[in-house]
Length: 330
Image 1 (cartoon, rainbow, N blue to C red):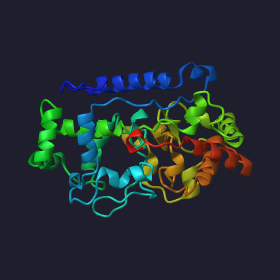
Image 2 (image 1 turned 90 degrees about the vertical axis):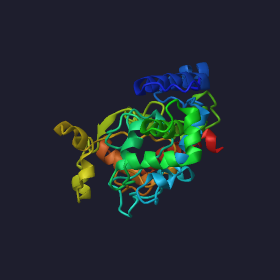
Image 3 (image 1 turned 180 degrees about the vertical axis):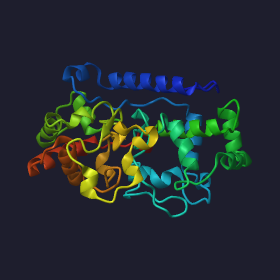
Image 4 (image 1 turned 30 degrees about the vertical axis):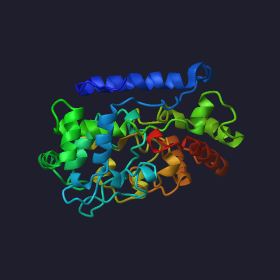
């Protein structure tokens, strides 16, 4: 149920609550047909219930350029719902015109990921919001100024007072934006209908692509509700992608930049593939311009194989069945 008492759960409790809703929603969506299919991928839950008042505040904040230092960018600048929750750039452009270090992942279904950012440095959506606002390239702001700006805005102040017992605080701002982001799940794709037992939801070519996706081992990392987003993996298991590409950057270090552990060098959060057809270009460096390019890179460096033209075409057809829109935008 949505929280309506004004008392906010601790972050850990919120995450447990969201996980429980996710599991319950997946079962409710597909019932016994899902169990009968016994697939390594699960359907997106119909909703992750959130407090509507907090969601509305979060929606406004998500689109508010005043969260940035100079009023140039908002969360939606890099995570535009009209562009699949991303921005269509290899690298996003921050508040002062500089390019970010990595490609912006989609905000759609981000609530289903076990960590946020490519290197997993945030363990919740709330933490992710906290870091982006003060990032010197992305928003370049500071939380003292953001809180003061929102306190001065009478509409925001009234809305926060009604939705939160302690009104406008940094924590509540982060919570509101995260609450909105949790509404951006995308149930009802043709693939989810297929998982639910509708054999007509996918063509024979698309089903063949899914079988190849499983047979070649893509599903070893891209599984679960979000077809990814629930584990870390080294990029370049079967070859040195970075040596072949050249021009290494600090962002290429991946998880190593967070932990300092040599075993985490070039390790990244496995991206979810939901709505992947909408979010080109691909990879953390934005170097794969098309889904076909991304499939070939993954085959080469993660599987140690060269896909045939038919393999590539078939898997891309499957990936295109993962497209759906958040209920809030329908």
